[in-house]
Image 1 (cartoon, rainbow, N blue to C red):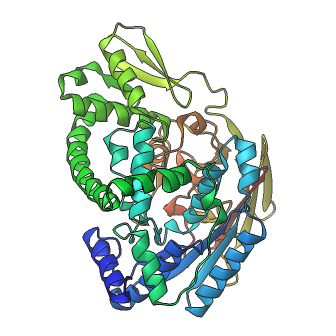
Image 2: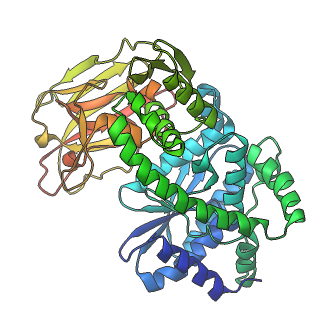
Length: 464
């Protein structure tokens, strides 16, 4: 059985080793009510007494398991109330979204969950309860589906605003800690369903590996650490080569002069950047692209997400395999003043409602994905709703640092086939709001704001 002090000490070591939390940070625990996330909440509650960070919680009810799911939400609410921890609760319709978008229920739930997390990323870090078994399952899953060494490294301990303080802890240690504290938790019945690939690995593959070697999970964890170091070193070398050989959509065939592992890393990154995500990009696609580089000009290779790679004389180019008629389209130019305070724009199945309001002490700024407020007095150009253009940019922090919109979309892993259709609220080439994603820091409301532009998005499949 794991005692309180050893569990807390282990998590503190992980937090410090990967510089996950600093004094003054705000940390949101993603809590489902299960053993792992309940343990994470209690452990961080203890650690914050020493490190001095703020602690809040996020719970997402996925609308999958009916009354059982609602009981989970009530359990989490009671737990947070008991410990004096502020809770942010969300309810989403995973089944509906999965059907509408042709996604698996598991993937739809994950996407909606992370959409909820996005509401809090700008002012804090999201702590998730991934542990050693989760890491081993991820490594096996990625190996089976053909991932390269990036996938075999497992779950990243820190990924942007997401941190994993329990990643060096086993499920046995987690359950032991909860027993030592007499803490109950909820059990998700879907964890037993074999329809989910991960559950199959968890209940069938992992136990057999443990029969072969009882230390298999720890060995996966150690391998993950070594892979981290190896990948980071190779990544640094590959980044140098990427800058040398790759522009936005073209890769110079001179890359083939480099070591094969560097060529593979650059090719993989090139495809992922053009796709806007790494999911479903496997070793097979990397090899196809490398073979294309070696072949004659004019050859083509189909890649995931509607991409086509074409061999030219001295480059390989990756583009969409179709033209977007909506690219550069302006849906409406907007002028709001004292006599015209409201405007509604309809684009396909989306309604954009804009309203000009005066700033008062009573105005509440919503923490919602599809309702945003902006400082209207900072808008100097032509305000419009449109698709993206060359030279669009967004301000990403309060220091005024800019990021090209294309780079932002790549960093956010937005698939390339969706980028041209995405709606933007713009002030000239300055993107005020990537609708459904983030806003420009420049237009945030301050104490000096006199007039506020309130934007609300409605439409099929859009849920706050």
